[in-house]
Amino acid sequence: MPRILAKETLAPDVVRFWIEAPAIAKKRRPGQFVIIRTDETGERIPLTIADADTARGAIALIVQGVGKSTHKLNRLEPGDTILDVAGPLGQPTHIEPGMRVCCVGGGIGTAVVYPIAAGVRAAAGRVAAIVGARTKDLIILEREMAAVAEPCIITTDDGSHGRKGLVTEALRMLFAEGYEFDEVVAVGPLPMMQAVCAVTRPLGVKTIVSLNPIMVDGTGMCGGCRVTIGGEQKFVCVDGPEFDGHQVDFAEVAARLRAYREDEATAMDRYRAELAAPQR
Image 1: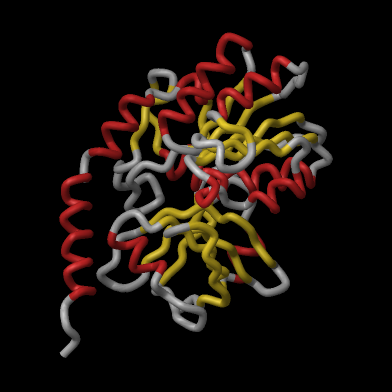
Image 2: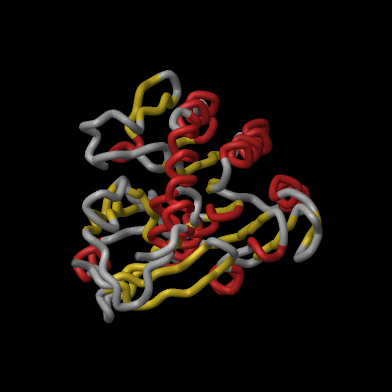
């Protein structure tokens, strides 16, 4: 079973793990993901491969504790094992040498745009980055993004770090200053990605978003990750996770994400009760 090699807390309830997975580390490309299970009863969790170290045979996964399974995962420590890690899955990011790309990350979405930004930079491309969150404590990967992007703009809703305001305001500023991009890549909460698309659509700038709906098998067989792109049905796990943001039916994706919200809340309440119960 894959072993956890290292663990680092990046923000409240956000952890970066380095996990033993030599075959995946060697094969993975920017934009791809894995599906993991912590144990036999755990749900299957899709996570972007945030980085890879082929010398150590390890991949980096950044996990936000949202529900029972992710909170359970974030309690694991170096030396612990995970039942299985399947991947790399999904279509890799399309990167051409010399591309001009603006990577926009909102919250945990920065963990998804970082490997894309690094991949564009490695292909002799030019990368600008905008990293946003509600407040300073929720900004992640600032140092890593600054190492591959120029400029790297930080925004917070409350002004506690970087520029006060939304990522869309920073994006409009870059366009106003004359920056030209072959494409914009935006990953974060659905409303944020939709808002970025509203900025780029009138300008005719290609905009890529990465979707992360409910997944089960990661092979397109279960149909749980169906989305509508340009009026056609696609499966995020095999056709994505990246799509033309101007073609995404965001309302449908949002409805799918809400489908099991009550069940997820119930499972989390039971898990908290188990943790609080006296040990016998």
